[in-house]
Image (cartoon, rainbow, N blue to C red; front, top):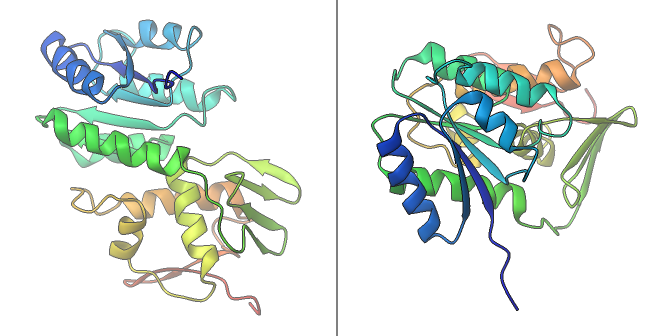
Length: 235
């Protein structure tokens, strides 16, 4: 029986980087599609939705941030995990991408092997079944179903990125427990990231999606200078 090859989309304008990454991905048995600009990348999604997108921020014409914005605005593509690549290495690029819903980032120059490992980490989070005790976690009107990778608020589905889901799952699994930023980065397999605001950005996005009043959170509480915790059942 033939094994289904995992589809990956690489949107990168540098032909040398594109070739190196494509070869590394093909060695993993992934089905790699490539695009040299944002519009071509968006057009290719209609033919075959990928399991993960690797997106360069600095693209000719429609840049990577605009591509990311469009992907996250469409119901058909907003759940596809996205890894950004950027040559700038500036906090502003990374934070902007994370705020738009990207799941991870790699700063150029990077080794193709590093990028492969980042994609593998994303695929583990999104494709591995999660049959565990306490499959459904609830707190008031908020429910997280681990087996279905689904979050609902007052009965309505909340569209979360894989990273946001992972963080919410960690917090809801231990109400009242304080998690440091380093502990939460471990939950994301993002140790060694260069921007220490990664967790804060993800938490800000989560609050916008699940909190009735994001400025006065009910679920995700901040311990200033220490980290985050999910509200205890009595709070």
